[in-house]
Amino acid sequence: MPPTDRIRDHAGQGAPTVAAQRTRRRLRADRARQLADLLRHQLLTGGFPAGTLPHESTLATDYRASRNTVRQALDLLRAEGLVDRLPGVGTVVVAQKYPHGLDRLMGLAETLREHGHVTNEVRTMGPAPAPAPVAERLHVPPGADLLYIERLRRLNGLPLSLDLTYIPLDIGTALLGADLENTDVFRLLEAVTGQQLGHAEITLEAVNADAHSATVLEAPRGAAVLMLERLTHLADGRPVDLEFIRFRGDRITMSGLLHRSL
Image 1 (cartoon, rainbow, N blue to C red):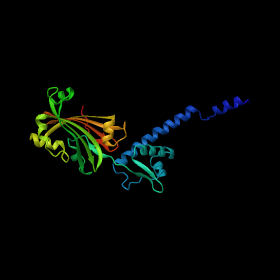
Image 2: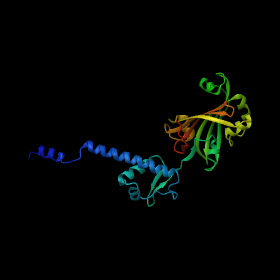
Image 3: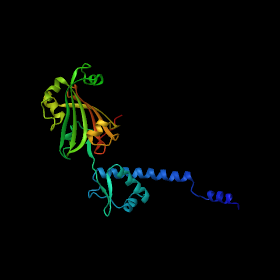
Image 4: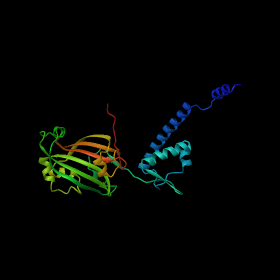
């Protein structure tokens, strides 16, 4: 049989082709991503209380995955900064994400009170003209002065969020002498107005950190951050607080309880 025929015959008997190899790599990458999602959930919910993940062979057995798939999944979690490989120890948890609920209207200190102490570094505070989109949402004339506040918020000393806040000046003036370094704005708003907060409209999306945000949050420039836009109303319906909050995505996880309603 001529050499070319032998090669063609060998390929026809199941020799791996470039396309087949690519398909296998893609399928393994898909399985690794799925496994990483499962392990990430356990990491963030205390599924490994000792701080060490099971051996790769144990994970492979438990999840019916190949050792290569397990290694690839752990590489994904390592790239996220959640785990690391220590010689003689194994794969250990090296980072923690803090839970932030989306089904209750609370300030950051209230939300994270079980996880440590929240402090606020007030970077900017004072009257500022209302940009048209902000004025519209807070029901004030365009260009009217608002109280503008920029705060860097830390949990146990670690930078967690950069908050930009707009408050109508008739309410905000009373906040100028308040202890914003140790008190949530929500509590201050309720004290100043004599009303409870009622509801808030929120939007959550991932954005790339600009140079300023990255520097303040001590995050890599261009890193993904969670952007929470929140318009909060008093119990009587008046909008009183428009916030643009940039969370370090590697230190916070958002969750909520949703009910189906048709």
